[in-house]
Amino acid sequence: MNLKIYVLVTSDLCKGRPPDKVVNATLQGGATAIQLREKNLLGRELVDLALKYRQLTHQYGALFIVNDRLDIALAAGADGVHLGQDDIPASVARRLLGPDKIIGVSVANAAEARKAREDGADYVGLGPFFPTESKTDVGEPVDLDTLREVKGAVDIPVVAIGGIKVENAAVLCAAGADGVAVISAVVGAPDIKDATTRLVEAVQGKKLSKEGE
Amino acid sequence: MNLKIYVLVTSDLCKGRPPDKVVNATLQGGATAIQLREKNLLGRELVDLALKYRQLTHQYGALFIVNDRLDIALAAGADGVHLGQDDIPASVARRLLGPDKIIGVSVANAAEARKAREDGADYVGLGPFFPTESKTDVGEPVDLDTLREVKGAVDIPVVAIGGIKVENAAVLCAAGADGVAVISAVVGAPDIKDATTRLVEAVQGKKLSKEGE
Image (tube, rainbow over all chains, first blue to last red; front, side, top):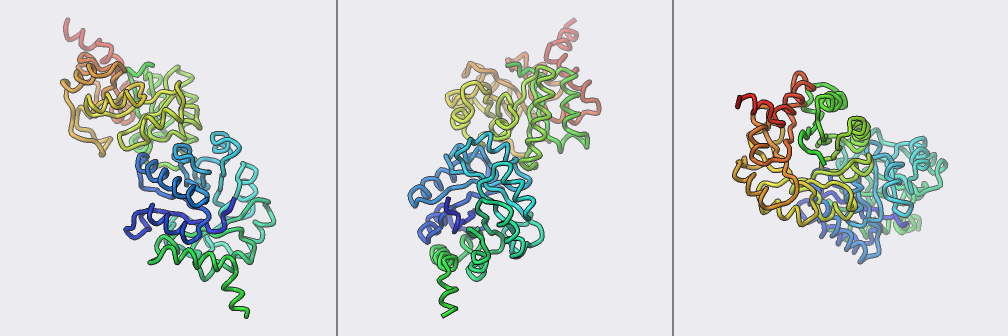
């Protein structure tokens, strides 16, 4: 389960570019996981998009996760779902999806992370770390201490999310994040492939080591 | 599959009354099927409501159908789903739900009804028959000729929907509708149980026969 470069794709944030082209570009740049994250599309559009993302992620060997809608995940044969605290409970999702699908849960602290783990989550998304324009329904920013607490509290991958850019990705990985989830930094970038590649380099510590030279 | 008195429940249209109380009252009045129809609730709230409706409908021996969200239907053990033309296609829903769950599809004419039937629908909802305030995403009203055409085109139940009230329910059933689907006429009524009972009487032709006496 490679969630190192986890790109959330919301068509409204793609600046007019077709979301499947955006997915293709970020996969070319090295994204390891794609999340379909739409709040304003109807079921038929969601199925169509999800099937396109499924094909592209298979092509690049990347994971494909659907936000919130288990039915769309099932319809498209996605690898799993990502659930917010207000979405279908992870325990219910596990029952419907079976043991093999990936379930991720958004958390803001160690207690929520432990609960998610107990309910069957395979990873948690922790955040927001920085102010973000992509999501309006999030709480107060969390910090690196919280990241370390969550890492100590659960034995599943912890993906950092919320306002993450190339510039701040490395410090999160250095502090223990198993991956970074980004929206605007990639899908809103002028050059999506290049933005992803720079994020890959940041996460791999290349920029850090260069700075240390 | 008794869809004769099919009550669609949208919490925003219940005039401040808790939707599960509304469901209970309409079941007391004789509703034969309940549809959970929400557009503004999150997954967790939907699961909670759906489980309440499931319990109540079991208690009264009524059907329980979920609008749009297959995942919520599966989570709550609903009898089936109702799908609009823009929702997950019925063929996909059938694959995910298996052969035993009920799938209903909204249609506006005989061609859409035939397509729905081919895709695996167990019933169609035809409408809107009259101007309605409950749904804003509907097309031009259909008429009794269309109802007769649809009845001639498919061998599955045809439920009339859209602006249906006690006063106009009987004529639809007389023209061949296998049931009437209502929203505001019941969930917005001052006395929900009484409004349902009067609808039952209208559909059973009691008012018609009285008029004929």
